[in-house]
Amino acid sequence: MKILQLTAHFRPNIGGVETHLDDLVEVLIKRGFDVDVLTYQPLTTDVFWRGVEKNKNIMVIRIPWITGLFYKLVSFPILEFFYLLPGLFFITPLILIWKNSDVIHAHGLVAGFVGVFWGKIFNKRTVVSMHSIYSFPKKGFYREFAGWIFKNANFCLGLSKQAAAEIRSLGVPVSKIGDFIYWIDLEKFKRVEDAKSQLGWKDKFTVLFVGRLVKEKGVLELLESVQEWDRSINLKIIGSGPLEGEVKKAASGYRNIELIGVIDQDKLSLYYSGSDILIVPSVSEEGFGRVILESLACGTPVIGANRGAISEAMDESVGKLIDVSAEKIKDAVLYFYKNSDRLKKIAGNCRKFAERRYPEKNVEAIIKTYQA
Image (tube, rainbow, N blue to C red; front, side, top):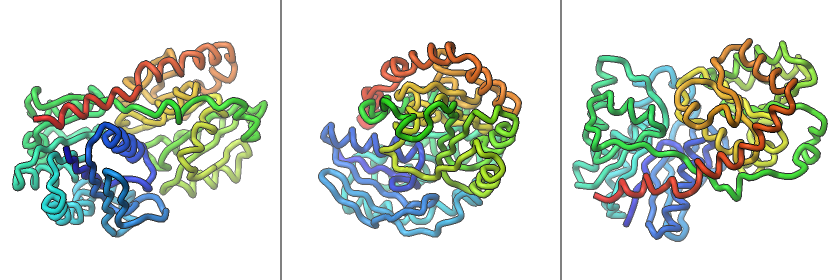
Protein backbone atom coordinates (compact mmCIF):
# COMPACT_ATOMS: atom_id res chain seq x y z
CA MET A 1 0.00 0.00 0.00
CA LYS A 2 1.27 3.46 -0.94
CA ILE A 3 0.68 6.23 1.61
CA LEU A 4 1.12 9.94 0.86
CA GLN A 5 1.80 11.92 4.04
CA LEU A 6 0.79 15.57 3.66
CA THR A 7 2.14 17.98 6.26
CA ALA A 8 3.32 21.56 6.53
CA HIS A 9 6.10 20.50 8.92
CA PHE A 10 8.52 17.59 8.70
CA ARG A 11 12.14 16.95 9.62
CA PRO A 12 14.60 18.57 9.77
CA ASN A 13 12.17 21.13 11.18
CA ILE A 14 12.10 20.57 14.93
CA GLY A 15 8.93 19.93 16.92
CA GLY A 16 6.75 17.28 18.52
CA VAL A 17 4.64 16.68 15.42
CA GLU A 18 7.76 16.38 13.29
CA THR A 19 9.21 13.78 15.65
CA HIS A 20 5.94 11.84 15.62
CA LEU A 21 5.84 11.85 11.81
CA ASP A 22 9.40 10.59 11.72
CA ASP A 23 8.34 7.73 13.99
CA LEU A 24 5.23 7.05 11.91
CA VAL A 25 7.14 6.91 8.63
CA GLU A 26 9.77 4.63 10.16
CA VAL A 27 7.19 2.16 11.46
CA LEU A 28 5.18 2.18 8.22
CA ILE A 29 8.29 1.33 6.22
CA LYS A 30 9.20 -1.39 8.68
CA ARG A 31 5.74 -2.88 8.17
CA GLY A 32 6.03 -2.92 4.39
CA PHE A 33 4.29 0.30 3.32
CA ASP A 34 5.63 2.59 0.60
CA VAL A 35 5.64 6.15 1.93
CA ASP A 36 5.89 9.53 0.22
CA VAL A 37 5.98 12.78 2.18
CA LEU A 38 5.03 16.14 0.72
CA THR A 39 5.95 19.06 2.95
CA TYR A 40 7.60 22.47 3.03
CA GLN A 41 11.20 23.33 3.71
CA PRO A 42 11.80 23.92 7.46
CA LEU A 43 9.65 26.93 8.34
CA THR A 44 10.62 27.50 11.98
CA THR A 45 14.09 25.94 12.24
CA ASP A 46 17.17 27.36 10.56
CA VAL A 47 18.79 24.16 9.34
CA PHE A 48 20.17 22.58 6.15
CA TRP A 49 17.53 20.77 4.09
CA ARG A 50 17.20 18.89 0.82
CA GLY A 51 14.44 19.40 -1.73
CA VAL A 52 14.22 15.68 -2.46
CA GLU A 53 15.29 12.91 -0.12
CA LYS A 54 14.95 9.33 -1.30
CA ASN A 55 15.69 6.13 0.56
CA LYS A 56 14.30 2.63 0.38
CA ASN A 57 10.50 2.75 0.39
CA ILE A 58 10.35 6.50 1.12
CA MET A 59 10.57 9.75 -0.80
CA VAL A 60 10.39 13.15 0.92
CA ILE A 61 9.64 16.18 -1.25
CA ARG A 62 10.17 19.59 0.37
CA ILE A 63 8.68 22.67 -1.26
CA PRO A 64 10.81 25.85 -1.08
CA TRP A 65 8.79 28.47 0.80
CA ILE A 66 8.93 31.87 2.47
CA THR A 67 10.28 31.52 6.01
CA GLY A 68 10.03 33.82 9.02
CA LEU A 69 6.24 34.23 8.89
CA PHE A 70 4.90 31.19 10.73
CA TYR A 71 5.17 32.51 14.30
CA LYS A 72 3.94 35.95 13.24
CA LEU A 73 0.74 34.43 11.85
CA VAL A 74 -0.05 31.99 14.67
CA SER A 75 -2.59 34.45 16.15
CA PHE A 76 -4.28 34.90 12.75
CA PRO A 77 -5.58 31.44 11.72
CA ILE A 78 -7.01 32.54 8.38
CA LEU A 79 -3.79 34.31 7.30
CA GLU A 80 -1.75 31.34 8.48
CA PHE A 81 -4.01 29.03 6.48
CA PHE A 82 -3.45 30.97 3.25
CA TYR A 83 0.28 31.22 3.94
CA LEU A 84 0.57 27.43 4.16
CA LEU A 85 -1.98 26.47 1.50
CA PRO A 86 -0.61 27.20 -2.02
CA GLY A 87 2.46 24.94 -2.19
CA LEU A 88 0.73 21.83 -0.84
CA PHE A 89 -2.40 22.53 -2.88
CA PHE A 90 -0.74 22.83 -6.28
CA ILE A 91 1.94 20.14 -5.87
CA THR A 92 -0.28 17.42 -4.37
CA PRO A 93 -2.12 16.48 -7.61
CA LEU A 94 1.22 16.13 -9.41
CA ILE A 95 2.44 13.73 -6.72
CA LEU A 96 -0.80 11.73 -6.87
CA ILE A 97 -0.48 11.36 -10.64
CA TRP A 98 3.20 10.43 -10.39
CA LYS A 99 3.08 8.07 -7.41
CA ASN A 100 -0.52 6.79 -7.66
CA SER A 101 -0.90 6.73 -3.86
CA ASP A 102 -3.59 4.55 -2.30
CA VAL A 103 -4.19 6.71 0.77
CA ILE A 104 -3.66 10.38 1.62
CA HIS A 105 -2.85 10.93 5.29
CA ALA A 106 -3.06 14.67 5.99
CA HIS A 107 -1.88 16.33 9.19
CA GLY A 108 -3.55 19.54 10.38
CA LEU A 109 -6.24 21.74 8.85
CA VAL A 110 -4.29 23.05 5.86
CA ALA A 111 -3.07 19.63 4.75
CA GLY A 112 -6.51 18.28 5.66
CA PHE A 113 -8.22 20.62 3.21
CA VAL A 114 -5.69 19.79 0.49
CA GLY A 115 -6.03 16.05 1.12
CA VAL A 116 -9.83 16.07 1.13
CA PHE A 117 -10.09 18.28 -1.97
CA TRP A 118 -7.73 16.23 -4.12
CA GLY A 119 -8.86 12.98 -2.56
CA LYS A 120 -12.34 13.66 -3.94
CA ILE A 121 -10.96 14.50 -7.38
CA PHE A 122 -8.69 11.44 -7.59
CA ASN A 123 -10.99 9.10 -5.64
CA LYS A 124 -8.38 8.45 -2.92
CA ARG A 125 -9.08 7.45 0.66
CA THR A 126 -8.21 10.39 2.91
CA VAL A 127 -7.39 10.31 6.61
CA VAL A 128 -7.02 13.60 8.49
CA SER A 129 -5.13 13.79 11.80
CA MET A 130 -5.45 16.59 14.34
CA HIS A 131 -2.35 17.09 16.49
CA SER A 132 -3.69 20.17 18.31
CA ILE A 133 -6.79 21.36 20.05
CA TYR A 134 -8.12 24.23 17.95
CA SER A 135 -10.84 25.61 20.25
CA PHE A 136 -13.07 26.40 17.26
CA PRO A 137 -15.53 29.28 17.73
CA LYS A 138 -19.14 28.26 18.39
CA LYS A 139 -20.23 29.65 15.03
CA GLY A 140 -18.89 31.37 11.95
CA PHE A 141 -16.98 30.62 8.76
CA TYR A 142 -13.90 29.14 10.47
CA ARG A 143 -16.00 26.55 12.27
CA GLU A 144 -18.07 25.72 9.17
CA PHE A 145 -14.96 25.38 7.03
CA ALA A 146 -13.24 23.06 9.53
CA GLY A 147 -16.44 21.01 9.69
CA TRP A 148 -16.44 20.65 5.90
CA ILE A 149 -12.89 19.27 5.98
CA PHE A 150 -13.60 16.62 8.59
CA LYS A 151 -17.02 15.64 7.25
CA ASN A 152 -15.56 15.01 3.81
CA ALA A 153 -12.58 12.97 5.00
CA ASN A 154 -12.96 9.19 5.01
CA PHE A 155 -11.70 9.08 8.58
CA CYS A 156 -10.61 11.61 11.23
CA LEU A 157 -8.07 11.04 13.98
CA GLY A 158 -7.64 13.22 17.06
CA LEU A 159 -4.52 13.13 19.20
CA SER A 160 -6.34 12.57 22.51
CA LYS A 161 -9.95 12.03 23.46
CA GLN A 162 -10.38 15.80 23.80
CA ALA A 163 -9.28 16.38 20.19
CA ALA A 164 -11.65 13.62 18.99
CA ALA A 165 -14.49 15.26 20.95
CA GLU A 166 -13.71 18.58 19.27
CA ILE A 167 -14.07 16.92 15.86
CA ARG A 168 -17.42 15.41 16.95
CA SER A 169 -18.61 18.86 18.01
CA LEU A 170 -18.39 19.94 14.36
CA GLY A 171 -21.14 17.48 13.43
CA VAL A 172 -18.88 14.73 12.07
CA PRO A 173 -20.43 11.24 12.40
CA VAL A 174 -19.00 9.25 15.31
CA SER A 175 -18.33 6.34 12.94
CA LYS A 176 -15.73 8.46 11.12
CA ILE A 177 -13.79 9.57 14.22
CA GLY A 178 -11.12 7.89 16.30
CA ASP A 179 -8.30 8.92 18.61
CA PHE A 180 -4.68 7.88 18.64
CA ILE A 181 -1.79 8.19 21.05
CA TYR A 182 1.82 8.99 20.27
CA TRP A 183 4.43 6.34 20.88
CA ILE A 184 8.14 6.73 21.37
CA ASP A 185 11.27 4.76 20.69
CA LEU A 186 11.81 3.30 24.14
CA GLU A 187 15.34 2.28 23.20
CA LYS A 188 16.23 5.82 22.15
CA PHE A 189 14.55 7.46 25.14
CA LYS A 190 15.82 5.77 28.28
CA ARG A 191 17.75 6.65 31.39
CA VAL A 192 21.35 7.74 30.85
CA GLU A 193 23.39 6.81 33.90
CA ASP A 194 25.58 9.52 35.42
CA ALA A 195 23.96 12.13 33.17
CA LYS A 196 24.33 14.91 35.75
CA SER A 197 28.10 14.40 35.85
CA GLN A 198 28.33 14.30 32.05
CA LEU A 199 26.46 17.61 31.82
CA GLY A 200 28.27 19.22 34.72
CA TRP A 201 25.06 19.46 36.73
CA LYS A 202 26.14 17.28 39.64
CA ASP A 203 24.70 18.38 43.01
CA LYS A 204 22.43 20.88 41.20
CA PHE A 205 18.65 20.65 41.36
CA THR A 206 17.67 21.13 37.72
CA VAL A 207 14.34 21.99 36.11
CA LEU A 208 14.22 21.46 32.33
CA PHE A 209 12.04 23.12 29.69
CA VAL A 210 12.01 21.68 26.17
CA GLY A 211 9.94 23.33 23.45
CA ARG A 212 9.25 26.29 21.22
CA LEU A 213 9.92 29.64 22.87
CA VAL A 214 6.47 31.11 22.31
CA LYS A 215 3.85 32.63 24.61
CA GLU A 216 1.55 29.62 24.20
CA LYS A 217 4.13 27.37 25.89
CA GLY A 218 4.06 29.46 29.09
CA VAL A 219 7.59 30.77 28.65
CA LEU A 220 6.78 34.21 30.10
CA GLU A 221 5.13 32.74 33.20
CA LEU A 222 8.11 30.44 33.66
CA LEU A 223 10.61 33.31 33.43
CA GLU A 224 8.56 35.36 35.90
CA SER A 225 8.40 32.42 38.29
CA VAL A 226 12.12 31.61 38.28
CA GLN A 227 12.86 35.06 39.70
CA GLU A 228 11.28 33.88 42.95
CA TRP A 229 12.98 30.47 43.10
CA ASP A 230 15.70 29.52 45.51
CA ARG A 231 18.90 30.40 43.63
CA SER A 232 20.18 26.84 44.04
CA ILE A 233 17.41 25.65 41.70
CA ASN A 234 18.57 25.79 38.09
CA LEU A 235 16.39 26.24 34.99
CA LYS A 236 17.74 24.86 31.71
CA ILE A 237 15.89 25.79 28.51
CA ILE A 238 16.15 23.83 25.27
CA GLY A 239 14.50 25.30 22.19
CA SER A 240 14.21 28.37 19.99
CA GLY A 241 11.54 30.79 18.92
CA PRO A 242 10.33 34.40 19.04
CA LEU A 243 10.87 34.74 22.81
CA GLU A 244 14.54 33.80 22.62
CA GLY A 245 15.47 37.42 23.35
CA GLU A 246 13.37 37.40 26.52
CA VAL A 247 15.05 34.21 27.68
CA LYS A 248 18.54 35.60 27.02
CA LYS A 249 17.65 38.76 28.93
CA ALA A 250 16.48 36.72 31.92
CA ALA A 251 19.56 34.50 31.75
CA SER A 252 21.81 37.58 31.84
CA GLY A 253 20.17 38.71 35.08
CA TYR A 254 19.87 35.35 36.85
CA ARG A 255 22.75 32.91 37.02
CA ASN A 256 20.43 29.94 37.59
CA ILE A 257 18.86 30.32 34.11
CA GLU A 258 20.62 28.89 31.04
CA LEU A 259 19.44 28.89 27.43
CA ILE A 260 20.91 25.78 25.83
CA GLY A 261 19.22 26.41 22.48
CA VAL A 262 18.51 23.77 19.86
CA ILE A 263 20.14 20.36 20.33
CA ASP A 264 20.19 17.15 18.34
CA GLN A 265 17.29 14.79 19.10
CA ASP A 266 19.78 12.03 19.89
CA LYS A 267 21.08 14.06 22.85
CA LEU A 268 17.71 14.71 24.47
CA SER A 269 17.81 11.58 26.65
CA LEU A 270 20.99 12.87 28.28
CA TYR A 271 19.32 16.17 29.21
CA TYR A 272 16.11 14.54 30.44
CA SER A 273 18.17 12.12 32.55
CA GLY A 274 20.33 14.90 33.98
CA SER A 275 17.29 16.89 35.11
CA ASP A 276 15.30 16.42 38.29
CA ILE A 277 12.04 17.48 36.69
CA LEU A 278 10.62 18.59 33.33
CA ILE A 279 8.23 21.51 33.24
CA VAL A 280 5.49 21.92 30.60
CA PRO A 281 3.70 25.16 31.59
CA SER A 282 1.51 25.63 28.50
CA VAL A 283 -1.09 28.38 28.70
CA SER A 284 -2.88 27.24 25.52
CA GLU A 285 -4.79 24.01 24.94
CA GLU A 286 -1.79 21.72 24.46
CA GLY A 287 -2.42 18.90 21.98
CA PHE A 288 -0.59 16.23 23.99
CA GLY A 289 2.94 17.32 24.86
CA ARG A 290 5.32 14.80 23.34
CA VAL A 291 8.19 15.96 25.56
CA ILE A 292 6.22 14.52 28.48
CA LEU A 293 6.43 11.04 27.00
CA GLU A 294 10.14 11.36 26.32
CA SER A 295 10.90 12.64 29.80
CA LEU A 296 8.92 9.87 31.52
CA ALA A 297 10.70 7.24 29.42
CA CYS A 298 13.97 8.63 30.80
CA GLY A 299 12.68 8.38 34.37
CA THR A 300 12.19 12.12 34.91
CA PRO A 301 8.90 13.35 36.46
CA VAL A 302 6.89 16.21 34.95
CA ILE A 303 5.16 19.33 36.18
CA GLY A 304 2.48 19.86 33.54
CA ALA A 305 -0.23 22.41 32.88
CA ASN A 306 -3.72 21.17 33.53
CA ARG A 307 -4.67 22.30 30.01
CA GLY A 308 -5.66 20.55 26.82
CA ALA A 309 -4.69 16.88 26.67
CA ILE A 310 -1.73 17.07 29.07
CA SER A 311 -3.84 15.33 31.70
CA GLU A 312 -4.26 12.45 29.22
CA ALA A 313 -0.51 12.26 28.66
CA MET A 314 0.35 12.01 32.36
CA ASP A 315 -1.17 11.81 35.82
CA GLU A 316 0.03 12.61 39.32
CA SER A 317 1.66 9.22 39.77
CA VAL A 318 4.46 10.61 37.56
CA GLY A 319 4.41 14.31 38.37
CA LYS A 320 2.07 17.17 39.17
CA LEU A 321 -0.67 18.96 37.21
CA ILE A 322 -1.09 22.68 37.87
CA ASP A 323 -3.14 25.67 36.78
CA VAL A 324 -0.37 27.76 35.27
CA SER A 325 0.73 31.02 36.86
CA ALA A 326 4.12 32.21 38.01
CA GLU A 327 3.11 31.52 41.61
CA LYS A 328 1.77 28.01 40.92
CA ILE A 329 4.94 27.10 38.98
CA LYS A 330 7.08 28.29 41.89
CA ASP A 331 5.02 26.32 44.41
CA ALA A 332 5.27 23.09 42.39
CA VAL A 333 9.02 23.41 41.81
CA LEU A 334 9.70 24.21 45.48
CA TYR A 335 7.53 21.28 46.58
CA PHE A 336 9.69 18.78 44.70
CA TYR A 337 12.89 20.61 45.67
CA LYS A 338 12.02 20.31 49.36
CA ASN A 339 10.51 16.80 49.18
CA SER A 340 13.26 14.70 47.62
CA ASP A 341 11.76 11.44 48.90
CA ARG A 342 8.47 12.15 47.17
CA LEU A 343 10.29 13.11 43.96
CA LYS A 344 12.35 9.91 44.08
CA LYS A 345 9.22 7.79 44.55
CA ILE A 346 7.47 9.44 41.58
CA ALA A 347 10.60 9.10 39.44
CA GLY A 348 10.47 5.36 40.10
CA ASN A 349 7.06 5.20 38.41
CA CYS A 350 7.99 7.07 35.22
CA ARG A 351 9.66 4.44 33.05
CA LYS A 352 6.98 1.80 33.69
CA PHE A 353 4.28 4.40 32.94
CA ALA A 354 5.92 5.16 29.57
CA GLU A 355 6.37 1.48 28.71
CA ARG A 356 2.72 0.78 29.47
CA ARG A 357 1.21 3.80 27.73
CA TYR A 358 3.53 4.62 24.82
CA PRO A 359 4.76 1.46 23.06
CA GLU A 360 5.09 1.17 19.28
CA LYS A 361 1.86 -0.83 19.02
CA ASN A 362 -0.02 2.49 19.35
CA VAL A 363 0.61 2.90 15.61
CA GLU A 364 -2.03 0.23 14.92
CA ALA A 365 -4.80 2.76 15.62
CA ILE A 366 -3.50 4.74 12.64
CA ILE A 367 -2.77 1.86 10.27
CA LYS A 368 -6.27 0.40 10.54
CA THR A 369 -7.73 3.71 9.26
CA TYR A 370 -5.89 3.22 5.97
CA GLN A 371 -8.11 0.27 5.11
CA ALA A 372 -11.49 1.08 3.57
